[in-house]
Length: 414
Image (tube, rainbow, N blue to C red; front, side, top):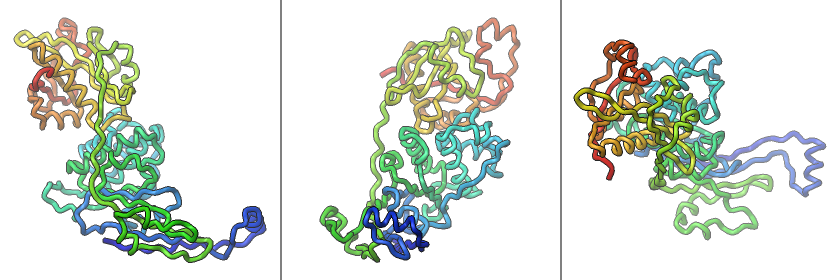
């Protein structure tokens, strides 16, 4: 454990306006103003993966984070205005860059080739997070048996402060999933004033910054019985009338992530324009496509379309389009929708196939017991335009791209 005792002082130049404000509100004034912050945080030699420092503005969160993990704080960077984000992520291999972007919930190839300046606040937040994680990741391949304490630490101040709370929750769940699944081999500390992300990020420890014992207020120990010994050890003393006092109350234990409920419906093709620009292929939709959507908290989150597959020996069904909106990427919404639709079609007694070039989807299906690889990643065999027109599959053609094909082998609708 790291025991931290921070005295934050600031020298003030006396002025007429300061004395005016002090006179209007009967404020004590002095040569200095500041705060006294005490806390204990887990050290880097202890076995934890994710931590959080949370509290209201001005409670000393950033001071504690700097005192404990200064060398690991994420620093603001200037993004080039004329480079796509995949070119501004450093010198790592492209598969690592796209994999990290996908893990933090930015899995849209169309977004990867845009400059940082044109992205939304939510997309910028995930780009900043991905870049910080990439810089901290080891250059060599990391295996699961590497001790946690040997991994590098990333500390992000103002975590999720510039995004909506829905995006904050989804991004936190995606990050937690990637770190705990060893997909991103780092440790992470979030510094934030938002407690709503705690069950989604699922930290191993949480440091809550609380007002200390201030003259004229009730002793904090009477309010928090389960932290009696900690409060006794960390009790603050007021250094003067112009100082505030804050205590960091450390709790351990990983909370359970809230259940994600999806409402999956059959929809009309009129919903497609909402998803069209986020698909990595063209925005076209086959006239015969049967469309489905997944709704998260009554908001459309993902779209899936299927087509009849006119094979001479094994006719069946084929996934035509699968899109998840950026705000909901990284927590498996698109995967769940795809597999639910596949189960429904398999229950008709005919096979269900899918061809994709998205590296994240290929990686998931290659390791999933629900899918069987029909064709490993590679270039598609040439097919004449006349054949594509005859079969009506021109909208679904994958010629010229590296793709992989899968058959869904899970059970049908239960």
